[in-house]
Image (cartoon, rainbow, N blue to C red; front, side, top):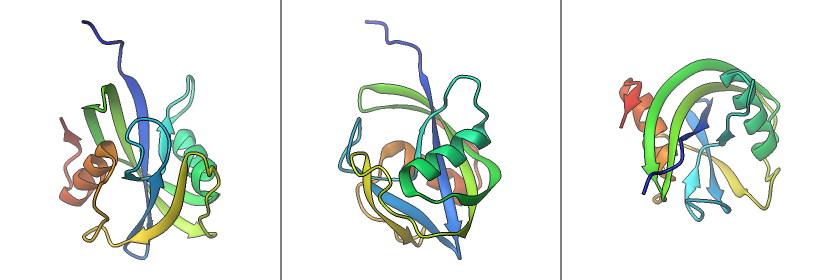
Amino acid sequence: MQQERPKVGIGIIVEKEGKILIGERLAGHGSQTFMLPGGHLEGGESFEDCAKREVKEETGLEDVIIRGVVSIGNDIAYDKHYVSIGILAEYISGEPYNAEPDVSKNWQWYDPQNLPDGLFIPSEKVIKNWLNKTVYSD
């Protein structure tokens, strides 16, 4: 059976004083895992605009600076196929909160070397690529 074409997902590493923002995924594929803020790239949208929009939609943080692409993944997981783009963002101000309580909750800052068990697979790849300074993983 042929699968539909892959979708494009954006995962954002929001970094603050050496820690990164992680929340619990409540909806969609991979629910009940821990994830980076992120979502679908919309038609006509830049990676930067998508990253800012998704961070704001999920965590309420409006004040981040996008630093660039840190990861590209070809993710086939949870019976889905995505091209995942990992973006690094620098935290500037604000307190994260559950801005989409039906989608995610419990946004907290984690040491990237001590993350919770049960990471959302695309988020795990983005973090791994960023830490290892490798951009692509399959």
